[in-house]
Image (cartoon, rainbow, N blue to C red; front, side):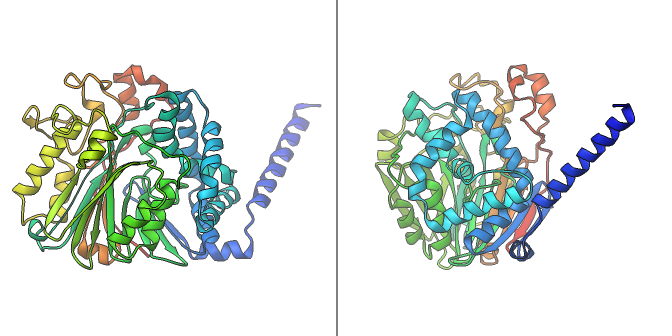
Length: 466
């Protein structure tokens, strides 16, 4: 066969392949109708996605509109799963399906089926089993896997937050703020603002990641007038494989709770202990705020109409902190937990009566180090920077680890009533992250080449549910 014939054959094969791809993504009339009700746009580093309708159709919208992002988040997390555990992602998928499938409500099972179908129709073939595994990955990786090997694969403090009301805020109403802390390779995908308008229950506006039916970072507003966020309880161990996973309980609470008490009761029902958090909750109808801390054996609840609660990865509840956790760092200002607890108290009490959205944004960008008593970008900030910290004061952690703050979110009662929020992608303070430069300066993390992305500094952006 001459070169011209080879070239013609190649072009023919390419044409047939292209036609096959086109045929494989042809939409049915129902699918076209579903997608007409959905929407996606990008703004300041965020991807806003609106989905609505019955469970399968809103899942289909989700999977179809975020297929490329879902493909990438799974590619990276498959690598991370094996790197940190020695087991491939399919190992976690298999165990997630064994543990969780029978405990997933049919509504949410249909939504996950829709996500798989939508992504597959858009060109990324993914199974329902993989979607279930992905939704349960944090619970398996951070809470179930340690019960197998005896320790957490990755020590990773997560998030700073506060909620305030009454005499602490400028108008006496609620202000809530949160930034996510995580390893950058995983956290770089939580740039989704997901607006869910379900057939039944309440509309939800929340931060999320591609393929999740819940938030994962847990910053949400609902049309019931509830707002909420959390910080993970550090040093915690506890998991019951026979109970309902957290990702199902929290999504159900967001969608169906009418009051703070109803929200808490849903979370307490058949609790498996995974993703133990200090939940900060607010009801913009009453002006009340609450802190709900939940482990496996113990939980606690407190509520006020005139005060604040902060979150810094350490339990306030004495039973949870002393009997379900180790190395809490509550009073150790060399750690992010102790330092931020002190710093939150300083910021919130010094600004009593003045706190609004703009001050909340400034708080999330705070770099004051209470241990060294100076401005210093490090782990002991509200806006944490592990990648800039040599860890000379906290040798239990690796120096210059590629993790820390990856965003910021703020909302007050007025915004929540209109289903709105402020969000900043990249870092609460706007400091950019250059992946290539980071690996050049810290070659011990060269294994992250091809998996770590840049996060340029971004401006604050406002988002509204549709």
